[in-house]
Length: 304
Image 1 (cartoon, one colour):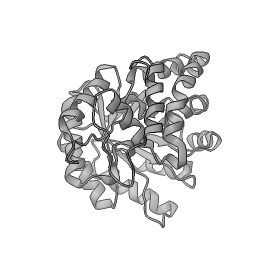
Image 2 (cartoon, helix red, strand yellow):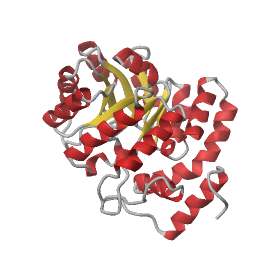
Image 3 (spheres, one colour):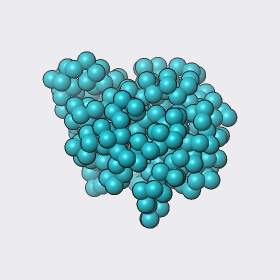
Image 4 (cartoon, helix red, strand yellow):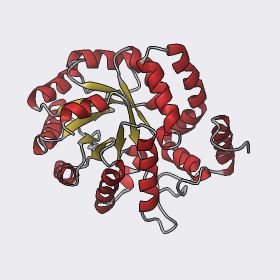
């Protein structure tokens, strides 16, 4: 699909897929394909291999490329595939061109991790990547509160294929200002802080949200999006209360167990192993028991 169609899909649940590992520590390709197919079958419109929930920074280049290939195969044109790219400019461009070559629909550019980021340099970084793949839609992943509407607007003017912004600064007032300064209608604005932030960000301009929960219960994420998109805020907040315990476990201690919580839930559902790579860790028995309680409350497993 072209950038314009991808922009429309972003106004939905943007699932950030986990990367399952087998008992040897290698990518479990069978489990990966099943997870993506399960989300697509539930109506998820966008899947994102190589996001932070996919342990992007713990994957080798070949593993990241394989994740894209598996996602394209599993989505089979029924959902958009938006691939995470990053690191240095050359590596990001190589990853973006690989994504294009294997049939992905767009790229999400991770926030630069360089310790010295100037505002003009931030624009230059993303412009170089976007210009290398003009056929693909490009989504900016903004985690730095210094990035403002002026920088995003400059990118949008220079590169028409920059179509969306995944905004993950935990400040809805700042988000509202940035979105309007950059162009509320020019880009699709995606709450990058998942379901807990979605109602607040939705109220000031977001039309989609990212989700790691969608790996576990895509239906629950979809129900929240439907409630928000139809203006049924009482229903959205009812769902928010159901989701809250799970997402708070993920967010605790500066998101130390963000991925571990998702993988533990998937392991309890028999969908993949709980294996995870350092610097993350497998959860302990108390945390596992709490996740079992949450899954039972959602009707996904028997009471523990």
